[in-house]
Image (cartoon, rainbow, N blue to C red; front, side, top):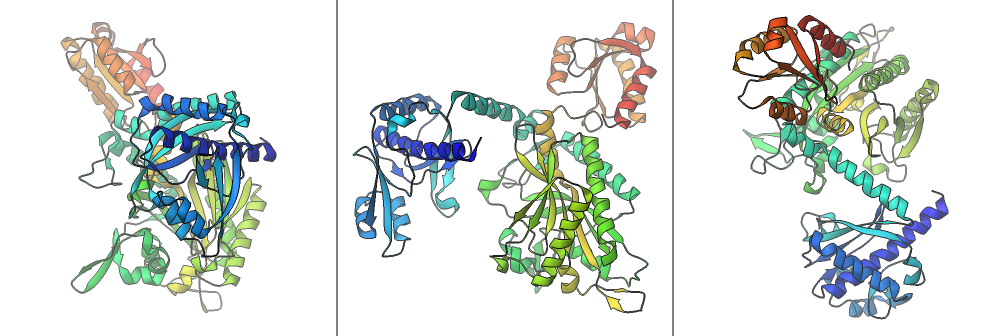
Length: 582
């Protein structure tokens, strides 16, 4: 869509948010209005003292159409702060916004018709008649804290889809329905991957047996890749002294996202939000020569960040998560080769997972807000220039984004587009001259001088939790065979076949194939339906015929037919599938 068309659509959406507010205020006079901006797929408006559900949507939409068909003007008027306070005296949220403005502020308001006005900068359509062809549909209602703060009251947010034409609306609704079917929270529950409990705590996922098998498969996969590339794996504590994080700069720049400090025996500890300080100390505990570098330290590490409750989302965004983290300590002349090696590893991993729709983002600091970051301008320029040159020389498709850097250095983020069009950051590479300074890291160079190494922070799978959520949604829960928690489901036809089923199960276990058997008294039809819902890649149906022939009846996920083959033939087929990452 062209820029002018996009601007027009946003103006129409903004105008429609006023129509929504007027419609709800007309139907429910007791409500108090808050704010109502345009968003990517429509608009929303927040209300206090509103209690509606899906059954009320049609009534609200009818009232909106009624207002549109009245051909009411959108009229702009400028008022003083005192006049605005008088005008919105019965609207506490508008009053709060007005009170935050300077005393001499000139405030613009918009009337929709003669009986509804709202604080607004505009612009809007001239008259509601221009909205007659605008396609909209109420999507959902949800809770939203006033001004996004948990300290404030929870309001009712009404989301509405809105587009200039019906086809775009239909496509948006189709994608939203697809997203619901792919939602990892829904699938995670159905497939017994993870669970949540408010009694345990918000944002603290519990990984069930199937989920643990998935996590283990991901961990083993990436660790094997790293070991082959010379990484050394470590295990470090999930908490540390507050002084560790004061040294690293996290306490100064990141403490709002950390859990509160804990005091015991005159010492103060914090749960770690990331692993770099621990890895800095591992490097520092040994003397290093320039010949030793690069040193690659990796960890599958548990981390903790205090995400706001409104940001929590299944295992995609949590307060306790596990990172596939590593830090490369290298000489300046090794930076390009090391980062090139990391990029090659990312591309290799994405090939295994079949990711094709991704791009690289060079995340830079915001030069107009440098207090967010530590270090000096010279080091920042040096780091950003180095990453930019590496991306250019690699031929990677990339773009630059100011303000997305870590507080200690610029980074390369890999933005992967999901099956439903969402962009997710999965992998990241960060170049850091700052932490080696803060921790006074050293190595001895060719002239026997003690000099600082450079640190490359990198995460290939990023958070295992978020990566698993992405995979579940990307595959609709039909995980590739090599990753699926249960690769084979054995079903018996009758009690006579149980012993044979156990023999097949044992053989598969010996080949490290993940298998479970359903030897219940349920009918074969019910067992098959259950296994299909569990998204088992291979279903083996074992009856008298299979016992006699030492064979298996194989039903592959997505097929309604079974194929008879010898056990050895099936074993070879599934092992080939697993080894080829299919």
